[in-house]
Structure formats: structure tokens, C-alpha cells
Image (cartoon, rainbow, N blue to C red):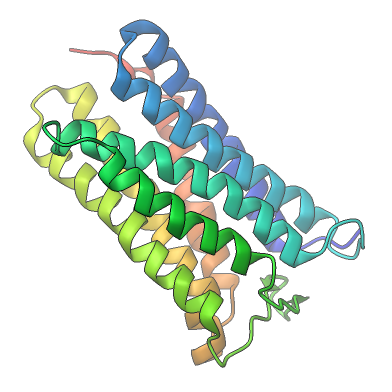
Length: 233
């Protein structure tokens, strides 16, 4: 087993996201409404992705599962989360329109993403900082371009939606919840671009991605251990 700073960062993120997912489950059980249900499942499938990534990174030298397979399986969970996101957006922003107008294109995009994710030709290695560089080709093949489109359309849009919610809602609980989801999607967008584009194009160490991930995780954990953040006032 080869240890890396990236594995530690993803383990910490999995723990922080697990706490947040549990909070969303409590919120859903209390409210019994569509919005908290969708938020819970969005968190849950992102949590599955984080756990798989952390497990594979802990077994870095293992041939049990290749990095391409890990990315493919992670993409399946991301696409499932995407469908819940689209349903959430239509329910919140476009209630007069059928969510099928968004779900069908999302399913098509997700299927293409899963197909290309199993063939990313990753060649990972641990750099001098102890962080994992996925070793994606710098030629930016179709799979990377598709991931860029996916990241902007999905994570960027969700970040914008929750930022708008954060600005508009008056209830302190809802405002803080919206801000946390905004942070989550901004992070996912940042990490996607960092992993698939910035590292290869600008030869920047992924160490800074891991530092950002650790800081975000610690922020989420601190917010979870402060009960007043979840008490409606």
C-alpha cells in the first residue's frame, strides 16, 4: 500500500460529506418534501464517488481496479446525482415545465460521459509533494472536452442556483444550507477543471488541489459540529 496526501484528502472529504449527507437525511425525514429528498440523494451519490476514490487511492499500487475503471464507476454515481440535480432545478426554477425536458438531455450526456470515462487513458503517479497526478493526456481528447462541458453545465449551474437561493432566502437555516451547497458545487467544478485540464496544461502540482480539498472538508466538519447552524431561529 502506497500512501499519498491525495488519499488522506479524499478520506477527510468522504468523512465531511458523510456528515453532511446524514444532515440531509435528517432534513428529509423531518420535512418529508421533494426538495430535501433530492438534496439528500445528490449528497449520497457524491459520497459514493468520494468513498470509491478514497479506497482506490489507498490501494494505489493495486491492480484490483484500474484508474480508468474507478473514474468510470465514479462517473456513474455523478450521472445519477446529475439526474437528481436536474429534477431539483426544474422543481425549483421551472415548475410549469416537465422535468423530462431536462432529464432526457441529461441522460444522453451522462451516458456519453460514462462511456468516455472508462477510456480516459489515465497514467497516475505520485509526485514529489506526495499528491496523485492522474496523468491524463495533455492533448485534451474528446473525453476531457466532454467532462469540461459536463462540469460547466451541471456544477456551474447548480452553484449558481444555490448562490441565488442564498441571496434570496431569509430563513437563517435555509441560507446556511444554500451556502454549503454553493461551496460544494464550486469545489467540484474547481477540482474537475484542475484534474482534467490545469494540471496537464500548466504543469501545476495537484498538491494545491488536495490542500483546497482539505480546507473545504475541515470547513464542512466545523459547520457540522456547531449545532446552531442547523437550528431554525
